[in-house]
Length: 67
Image (tube, helix red, strand yellow):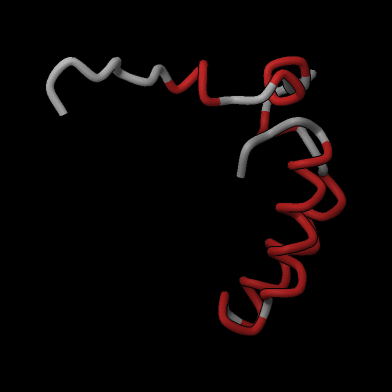
């Protein structure tokens, strides 16, 4: 739409999102759920490990990552 202001992605985020920045690198966050997820995928394949994949994603979200 001509004349409509562009929305900056940072403006679209809530104040809570902007204040919850990760304190560590994603590769170092949640080592326990990462290990369980990786072992499951190696042994059983990705499709059989949705429980561990989701648990790891939830842990990463609690650390401030947007996954």
